[in-house]
Length: 141
Image (cartoon, rainbow, N blue to C red; front, side):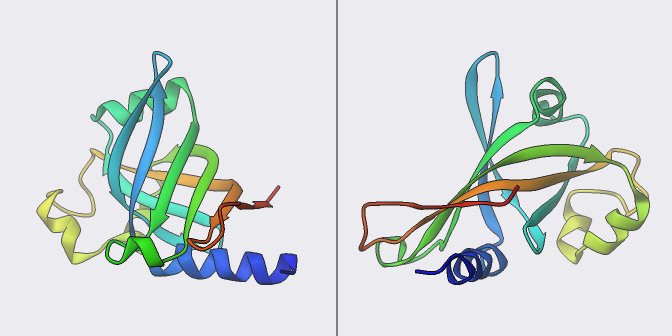
């Protein structure tokens, strides 16, 4: 498979799947969270509450791992494992861009002072195909 085809296949999985498992590291132990991500190319974004433990974990160690794939039919679907670096921002224009009606269940409004954006810049994606034991690594640096 050509590198361009691999990248396209990985991007299709990233774009299609919104609910993912984000893993951070705290005190040398992994911590995982279900998150809803939005992507723009190979950059993932999510809104969260800045008072959560994961925000403190990210401040201590910005390295993260995301497992992303179909929620149903997992055994016959391709999925990706992602490594990257997280940054935190309170950019109001980005919050407005990422806002969805679902967020009204979590926050008072788009202007809620507790909103923070997690931005994950993908560094390495491993494309996993269920009929192949080997992962295809795609370096995005």
